[in-house]
Image (cartoon, rainbow, N blue to C red; front, side):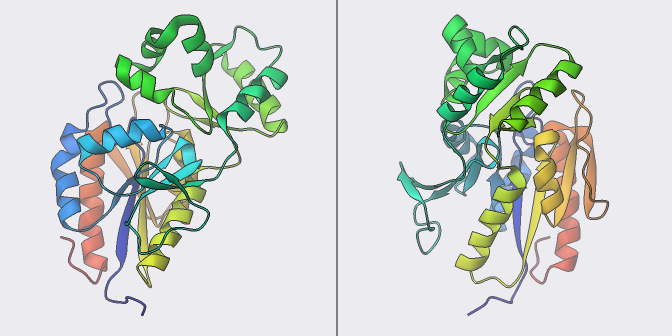
Length: 290
């Protein structure tokens, strides 16, 4: 039977520069609101360029038991027994069901070797940094701890690129690899090379699983992000929050309605904007989320 009692909210949040501070990776300013959302049964779903290993570790700190989306939409991880049935096309990975949407990492490394000739010295990848400098080198360019840097390299579907050249050459690089079949998404620090996937497609994919499993007539998706690789989900969601960044311009979304712009950066901006959204949502929802 379809559940018509209330509109189910789902929060899809970017991590670095949004829920997590760009430099310290702290989420402390948002912690009280995260706890409140959990008591209100509002799932907070990480949707990130990070790896499966990184998010599994982070979920412990966040006390988060919900599904999550990794590597810019390349895969969706759903805790076992979270839904009443196993999602179709899912494979078992540790304590999760994993839905894959992209070719493996090695495919993109081979594409780089074949199609990025002529750009030598203008970029480095996570793979090349680890090979040349070890995880200390990766730690230097990410700002992560050594352990976190190791987890960030456990990628299954994409390869992060650290661009060293100028912007004009970067655009030529992106154009050349796109023509060869890659999708390149600019995040806060790195360009991610992967398949024809994005956060928006994955958001809609997971939202549909919620709607089907819970027999919901209506859902309200909130997407939160701060950079270019968040544009697709910011445009796809019912409501979008753009987190202010001191590091880069705001992502250029196509929507003009149901859009909230934070004044603060990182988790402070997250807390401020989600609190505003929650107040507005409690006014339109048929269940009291205030």
